[in-house]
Amino acid sequence: MTSSLLQNHQLRWPTDWADIFGREAPLIIEIGFGSGHFLVDLAQKRPSANVLGVEISLPALDKAQRKVRTLGLNNVRLLQSDARYLLQALCSPEAVAEVYINFPDPWPKAKQLHRRLINVDFLHLLATRMVPNGRLDVATDHADYALAITEALESTPYFQSRLPTTFVTEDTERLRTKYEQIGLDEGRTCHYYKFARVETAVPQSYPIPKEFPMPHAVLQSPLGLDAIEAEYGRFQYSYDDCHINFMELFRAKDDDSLFVETYIKEEPVAQRLGLVIRQREPGNYVISLHELGFPRPTRGVQLAIGQLAIWLVSLNDETKILHHNLLPEALSTNLSEVH
Image (cartoon, rainbow, N blue to C red; front, side):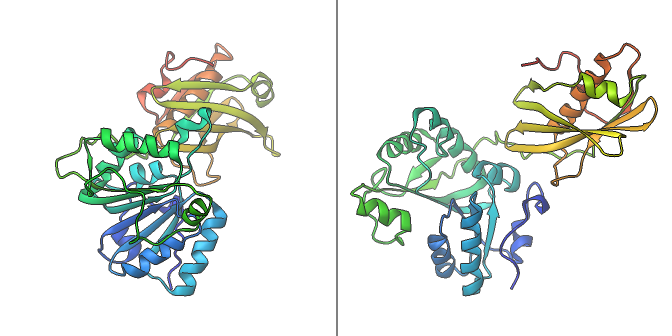
């Protein structure tokens, strides 16, 4: 049996799901499958569908993988990912037939509300990746989140209820999940939403992110690595929706390179990676992306290398960039503001 657990770094933007599953079939996604009970039942009931389970929790992924292997379910694949990344980066427009979101984290504290998955913006993204009339089922036992989900679903022009009402509080047809039973045992009311993607065209406002050739910049500088290391301090840059945080700097044991731990957030991708300032010979440096952790060479990485090069140039009047393969905006001196 083929391993059900996918390796995120091996998946293309977008992913050919027919190739991943080895067949053409409707793609069904469960977002946040928890113990995997509902996911496994869904795969057993729908053997003609390709079923993808997405989860952040490693223990949940391990548990679900054991269930899938024990039952010999060849139509299931599992992926550690957040939902927005999966949909925007890995799914082509109209690639998804059905989506199930069972008891998503309600993030109940006021300062956490922005972390809730379901809102009008997410529904727009979801609609761009679903086929017309594709099914969306949502369940929650959190009263406040139910109000927010109701408002979002009633506000979006991209989905409509398959029921006479926005939600029902009882659904005898679906398999009861562990979290659902816990909520019912504690006296909470469950809300079940059964919607469908509208047939009309949905604006494609969420482009699939691009990967660029491995970026680099070559500089000439009279400064040595010791001087560069002494000048370094943490700093941040922002440009459009890209936020770059240059964090710790480490010196290689062989003393010919510096490793800059960098965090880059650009929708829908967040990466913690390493940028390397390597001395090829005295006075000659190359700034490039380290391969540690299988980083994606995105636009944000281009911006980060450009800004690190600009910082290095700022240290000495004789330092200059000899050549590079970066986007023009990556080396704009007014690109960003230090925070």
